[in-house]
Length: 184
Ligand SMILES: [Zn+2]
View 1 (cartoon, rainbow, N blue to C red):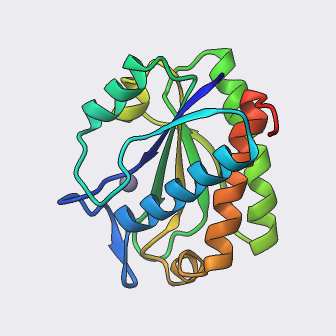
View 2: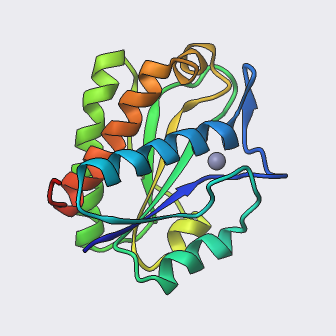
């Protein structure tokens, strides 16, 4: 059975970005745990979550957890922040990845566009970046930037429970499609 490591960004003393009454660490945890729930409820898969509570986990420990369990996918959930004006969704892979990871990310990204379209969210696209959790993780690794927490419009969506359910379920469905998981 395929193994997915789900990684809620930040936690504990590391709040991540903040804005409009929200903390990235909380939003990331909520979405990640819901994604985990949807994956396990609908698909034959094993999952590991790097943190279930509001606690600090180092970037190194997140990658180690994935590497030591030989995960098939490392999925890291974050929210973006910039200057308050930037908005939308984007996802990341490491700067140089193999074709398998490229295919997984493209399939995943295309699935996510369904929710972006439903809510009229700007798609900022598929990007690459030299991020520690992507670089140090041997599994295919995707990091999602789930809207801009410091943008008023985006933060209103992050406070909308329907949106949170929809994006979490879509993340799960996107992962399942990309990894060709069997339905339960
Ligand atoms: Zn973050």
